[in-house]
Length: 367
Image 1: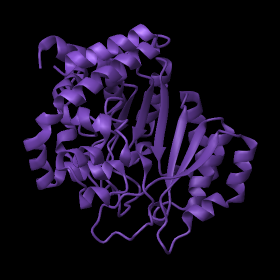
Image 2 (image 1 turned 90 degrees about the vertical axis):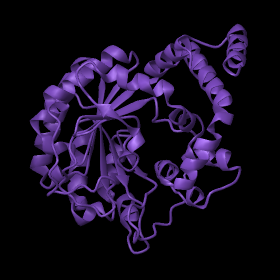
Image 3 (image 1 turned 90 degrees about the horizontal axis):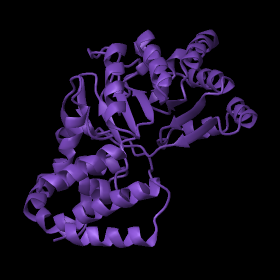
């Protein structure tokens, strides 16, 4: 790739980043069997410090002009206590929204939930996502989740309760949706508290069937690539949302050091496969290189699961090596035009002359 084209792609990618996710620790108060990171209370995992996370935030704000959100996940991010609260406070002070992803263990008592929500409110937390369901409730009772949701909602902090897909024997989703207290909270504060049931991904060979329906995202490109980057407890930078990146070594971009985030992300300008996955999704990449369907990919229920299969299957890896060059011109041309139009839309519209320019740009990139 010629230097000016690579520079243009790097600039486009930097413009597209909207969020940074800190996987603050792999330690957790729960040990869910199907955890993507195999977290547990006994796992010896480092924890990110406030000083480190603030440094990353400053770096990212400098390099990514459209950065808007900082996400704290895990493991269990609330195990960081004051280090978490300090970082939320700082992110708020520099104009960024914040989101925590938690299992709600800290709501075991209503007084503890109230105390922590008061701290979160003072820190300026924008949103809290609480995970529950059949796996989580083996470790964190639903009452704890309800207590957290009640205090968060009353404080005006947007709250999303995410429930795992049920097994044939479980009724967690039904019980959550029929919970009278949650229903009253949602009626009291419309739009502040919402419920969702996510597509569930298997991580074990003996996983119980969950009756998943096909997720529409499987037929689409990956919106996480080039919009969100991840920093792990080991201070590694990863290119995607994180659900299966520990199963995909290629998603790791290297260890973070002060001022290094831009160079890590700029490397993506040379990563054709990630650009292709971003545009078309792993399922359509496989269909293109094989010219047919693939049993593993077609059986996947989540885009991250399909991505892991694409990277792990030896036959698919070999197919990519042999065939990817046939698709470079088309993919890179579409990527270039997509970014060009997105930048133009952000400036207030796409007049006909801009559309003509984008067509010319596509023709040049395909030469």
